[in-house]
Image 1 (tube, rainbow, N blue to C red):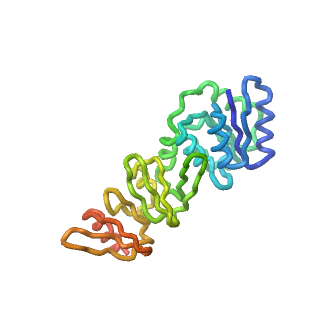
Image 2: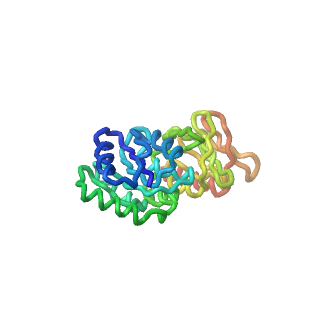
Image 3: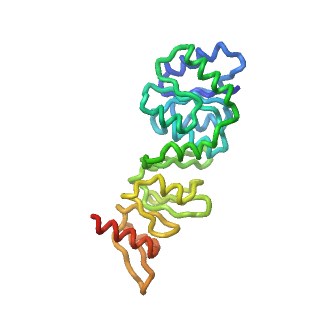
Length: 246
């Protein structure tokens, strides 16, 4: 088995490395100090097993998991963290195990045994990423294009457009494509901030300047930067309901 160790603490990586040293059938292909390094190393080495920290700079462990699936990878994942509050989310994501630092060698061996037994039987990580966020609006969106990873904080997201099995994300004057349906992304966004104004568009309400009507049915959302997006009858009704609530 090829293993990848991902943790922003040198000591934590050393502990996992030491425990794996007694297993000659496991090759450590890379060690990474952050999520960006992990995504790049995983693409290069295609690991079977990932020991993955959760709270890391730049990308957290769950975002790494999502991006691995974007590359078609489904490694076994053992989360290794100092924080117990992520345990439920990790198991909802079908993680092999959840090691809480500091852990004993016996506890590590138990997690490794599970990884061996479950190798090749994990669900897709994109599905897991969506499932483990149920009831938790996104705080940011990660987009992978080749080896480049972009993190979009939601306060910088202007609007989203459906493009077949992809979504086009408009942020800071740039367009980025992410392989995801508009409906699945909509379910992960805060409905008080992001509104489906058309079957193909979701709008960040903070960007809306006004709605203009040209003719009986045709309406457009005019954004603060001058951009115009179509507004359907149902989308206009959603906007009116929000205005009335406000």
